[in-house]
Amino acid sequence: MAQQANPLEISPSHHHLITDYLTAMKAEKQIANNTIAAYQSDLEQFVAAIEARQQSIITVSLAMVRASMVDWADQLSAASLSRRISAIKGFMAFLVAEKKRKDNPFQLINRPKQAASLPKSLSEDELMMLIYTAEKDGSSHGLMMLAIIEILYATGCRVSELCQLEVSPFRHRRKTLIITGKGKKERMVALTEAALQAATAWIEQRDQVPANITLPWLFPSGRQDKPISRQKIYTLLHDLAIKAGIDPNKISPHVLRHSFATHMLNRGADLRSLQILLGHSDISTTEIYTKTRDDRLMGLVKDTHPLADES
Image (cartoon, rainbow, N blue to C red):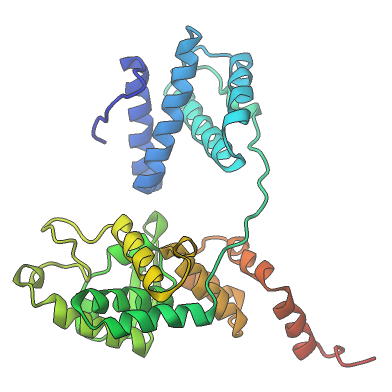
């Protein structure tokens, strides 16, 4: 992993240890770049606090750790604190394995319990309004936006997965895609006819730019070496929401993923199938969608339970 800037001015020896750990973690666990960056920030903040007390990460005690925890509790959300503890616990375990430390004081620290946040999704009417707004645009921009929305909504893929989609399967109008998700795990998703048609129309427009023809990505960025970025898609969706008369704060690529899952569940999809389509490693992650529709669960019992109609 390339050496990065050291904005907190932590000591070179500590910075080197952090870099070694993150390099090892990325190689062994296939951690996403965004997670690596978040862990690096957490570790640098921790080390900076330790150094401010004239301590070393090699000798820092449990008492010093607890003192830092008190400070963080006032500064960080439960989610951010949980991530920071996870990052440091792993870092300490790495130092023990590398014989830099004799113990891991974070073994005795538990992550705070977090209230499960319910996923936010658009209504089906709002989704249709987004699609209609992109359709009536008719420009190159509109064709690209229509393809983006249709694919996100048809597959429930993550925005990072969308960015890496290659054009070849769409040229051949394949009705299923192999998507590489977190941890480089592959899964198969199906495309709707609407998504295939939108992709075909976009590709015809895309190929009007000669430089795009040899590029592998369905959505090039305009730079020869990179596909479209997650940030760009977020901005494009934000702008489209405004045109569609929808609160732009309600829209993001992940909201479209949540909308896919919620609408599928509402229309009768089973949790196990939805887990596979979303690429969740644990079905408990998928089960959170059931909490958004208590009325659906009651209706499911009423419609299917053999004793539901008995008085």
